[in-house]
Image (cartoon, rainbow, N blue to C red; front, side, top):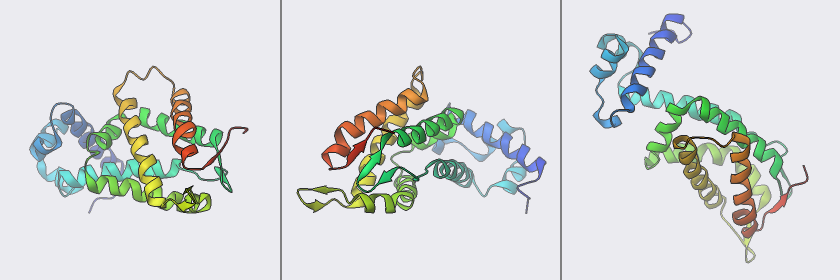
Length: 204
C-alpha cells in the first residue's frame, strides 16, 4: 500500500493525472484505456494499479479532491441574517470559487462534461445541502404562504451555477472572477431569489 504523503507517490500521481487530462482533451472518458494512461505517463500498468484500482477510481479521486476544495470555499458565515441574504459576502465567496476553477480547469471541465452523471449531480447537491441546510431552513422560502422545499431551492440554484460554470470554463474568460460573480449574483438576486421571497441585502 503506497503512502499518499510520499514524494515519489505524489510525483507519480501527478504524472498519471496529467496523462489522464491530456487524453481527455482528445477522447471521451469511456474510450480511454489504462494502457493509454500508463503509456502517456511513461509508467507501466502495474505502477498505475499500485495507485488506482481502475480509471473510475482515478476519476473519482479527482472529483473528490475538487469537491473537497469546493466545500472548503463554501462558507456560510455572515451570509444570512434572518430572511436577509448578504449579497456582497456571497459575491466574495463565489469569486473565490471561480478563481479556484480557473486554477483547476481540467478537473472542473470533467465536472461540467459529466454534468448529466446522476451520481455526480447527487454528490454536488449533497455538499450544498449539508453546507446550506441550516441556511435555507433559516430563510424559510415561501410562495403564496406555502413553504418551498429546501431541496428544490438548492437544486434550482445549483443548476444555474453548474450551467454558468460550464460557460466560465469554456469561454475566453476575459471577464474577471469578481465581475463574473457579481453578474451571476445580480441575475439570481434580482430575479430568482426575489420571486422566492428572499430579502436581498446589498448594503455590506
